[in-house]
Length: 182
Image (cartoon, rainbow, N blue to C red; front, side):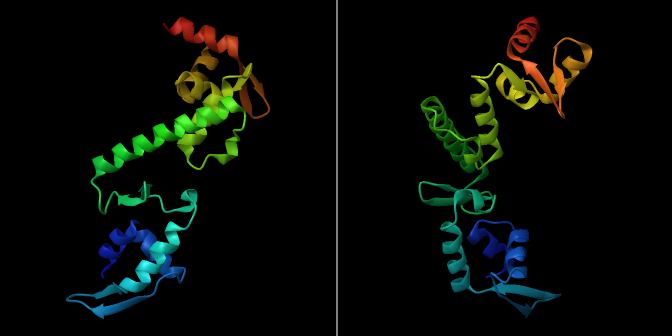
């Protein structure tokens, strides 16, 4: 199997495949090609690595490998980009529902989030009960970018205080600022 085929089989980029070779997770043989040596991978060894990757926690899997109900789909492999995007959206909706349920039950820990999207969602959920918010929490809560909030603070449209290295914003000030926008 050549490099592109092996990457598609594993559901990773060719760069990730090269990284596995340098980490001695995979062995590669080079055969003479028309103009340069061509990398050839053993199918049995690739299957072992694929099973090993499937046993990893979801947060430690390669970024292009997306698992939905036991079937693997990749942007460069089996599924089309739209299929993968649709399934990823569905997976995110499920994660949001689970996160919201855990948040309401009071058993949610922000460190449990594996992806940046879930961390952002957690920040907005955790901000629901706070009186004083960080800039990131205010941005997640209002869906206004941190850059826009910084501009508003700079112009005086939004009152905030610099505490330590970050801005702290009172919830009622943020709510009045958002009301003024509409």
